[in-house]
Image 1: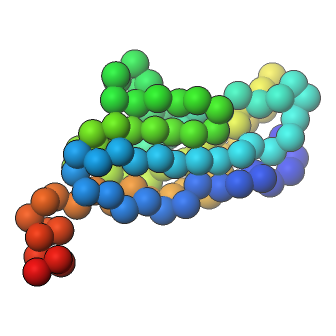
Image 2: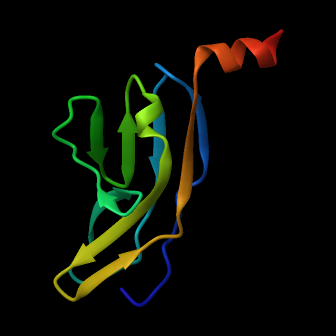
Amino acid sequence: LRDDFRQTPSDVVVAAGEPAVMECIPPRGHPEPTISWKRNNIRVNDRDERITIRGGKLMISNTRKSDAGMYVCVGTNMVGEKDSDPAELVVFGELFLNLIIS
């Protein structure tokens, strides 16, 4: 895992209740690294039915304000682990969005 991430996650802004998707492509490695995610330095729990981690994608359906934070994609194999640059998920409440629209 010496190389940089082939794709790092980007900042995402969503309204509460909307889905959010973050994506990363880890560095090449032998064996090929597995992907996990951390939010504010705590591993994301994909046992939550709203959260799916597939390939390099983190998908959160029905986002909540509590999902907001700094997300890091983690590539791991038997040799080691490497973190991506952080990306921010911003979750706006409906009230704030109504103020922007009007």
